[in-house]
Amino acid sequence: QVRLVESGGGSVQAGGSLRLSCAVSGYMNNNRCMGWFRQAPGKERERVAGVNVDAGATYHIDSVKGRFAIFQDIAKNTVDLEMSSLKPEDTAMYYCAAVPGHLAGLGPGCQFNPVTHFLYWGQGTQVTVST
Image (cartoon, rainbow, N blue to C red; front, side):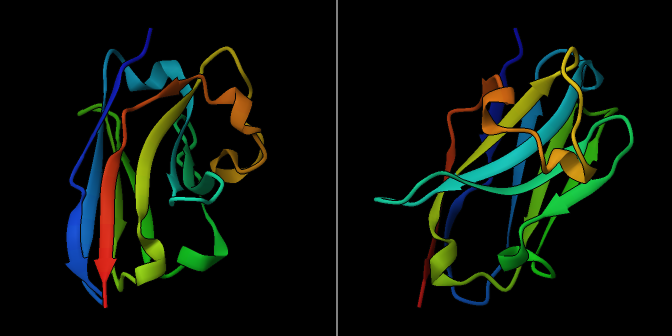
């Protein structure tokens, strides 16, 4: 069983920055993919970014490209989401999730892995961006 614990959320003004971190129990390279998702009130969960743990290839959705970046540190068993130029529409609960190693990674940053492949989830960390 993989345990994921997110940290780093908070409240910032538009244009500000935050760095979210996800601590992964066990060996991170036992997982195929790591991803960050978000869900705003009344909206569906949205994939934000992903990384293939072995290859290091990353994926970011268009709305965060150039502003967010996913980083993995296998030695520290962490995967971070660096967020800058934050906008009010980035306000959401942010979740870290993992695809286990027995599943294949589909595409750079596992962008084609369905959400159902992400079997392990953290409890989430809230990001609030005010105008």
